[in-house]
Length: 68
Image (spheres, rainbow, N blue to C red):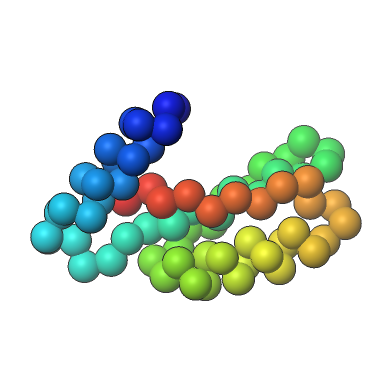
């Protein structure tokens, strides 16, 4: 996804007045190739979960992305 496309998607999320909250996907990638995902409605909770997962020695990466 290009940078312009991601900014465009974010603008769409911000303009939707019907939306009461956003959804944040935390994707955790492990060293053995496994993947895990969890969705939060609070960005702070999603960020804290990702930071906590990153401290684990078996986690390769943990990302937070806005999905809606």
